[in-house]
Amino acid sequence: MEKGLISVDRWAEGSQAYFLTNLHTDHTQGLSSTWAMAPIFCSRVTAKLFPFKFPNFNLSLLRVLDLGSWHSLSLISPSTGSKVTVQVMAIDAYHCPGAVMFLFRGEFGCMLNTGDFRWEKNCERAKLAKEMLLNALKDDAVDVLYLDNTYCNPTFQFPTREVAAKQQVADIISSHPDHDIVVGIDTLGKEDLLLHISNALNVKIWVWPERLQTMHILGFHDIFTTDTSLTRVRAIPRYSFSINTLEGLNRMHPTIGIIPSGLPWVVKPFEGNGKLFDSLLTSGYNRSKVSSEGGKQNDKSNGNLESVKRFHKYVYSVQYSDHSSYLEIEEFIKLVQPTSMKGIVSSSSCNVDPFYYFGRICGINQPSQKLDNEHQTFGRGGYTGIEKKRKRVGRLGFYLSRVTVMRRGRKGIKLDEN
Image (cartoon, rainbow, N blue to C red):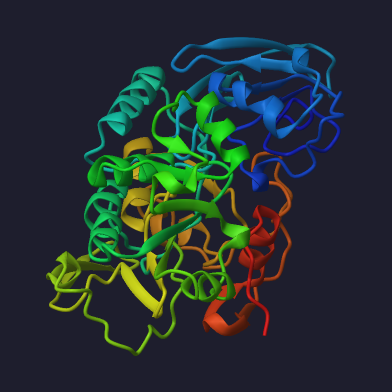
């Protein structure tokens, strides 16, 4: 597509139409309440949440795209001055509320930008989205796939969100019947996790006042509360989740904390008694190992679930992810069969070009592992060109890339300083 027509999740000048895949901070860098450059296209849910994130925004600039319907845009070619028609469809990305993919087609061909997404294999919502995408494509080929490559590395294997929530998180909580529970979450996302906890334990969930407003906008009116006397389970902002916070809470009442994330937070797990009160966490777990050739090996472990780590006597890390795992990315690429593809995260925690592992699916020879830092109109703003460095962070003893630290800083996570 010619430069100067559209931008996805990038907010620099020079485009005629802008598209927002979701409202997470790493997709809105450069966007503010004073935006006035051009219309912004987004999902209906994102449009409902928009005024809460950007107060006093000129809402007449928002254009709502209903899922599964083609919408036509008449733009002007910057090079020739002639009319250009672009068709676009929004498709459920199942990442956070309002998150969508954008499928574009026109004389330039067919392009798909996934934004952040997770389509789990046996998820009904993902199946509907797949059908929507395939029906939209019909016999068209995807010329360029702009892919969420956050976990584009064979080391990133984690359970479905349903398993992580219903079996792992709920089991940790039920195994601590006399403890208060704090779960670190962002200002948007992980709602399904909280609903699973509420249903499994038949409890309300405490959230902070601003988060309660978001829950009400999303239609959740009876499950969440700001009254701490009604529940022992609290969802707190990740920026207030720290070892110091948990140690302070435990001086008043026994409390454990849970970090839900696909990131491998733990380098060296807590060396205390790892037995979780004879809970389900001590059952066997089948772990998959995948090579760059796509082969799958089963490594049957008989210890604790590999996706649950206890890295402090008060803290558990559960690999509950709203991004696709490595195998899910592979299945998605097999479904789409793109001619070419580019990662939208050019400096992620693994920093891998999708072609390195998946070029064989598209019939492309395996390139170098590192992504180039070419400027792209499609992609997540603020990541390109950042050198990846690994860094030890504070007393928790885990390692994050510099990019991850920056991303979490923008999202508000509190990294305990030594």
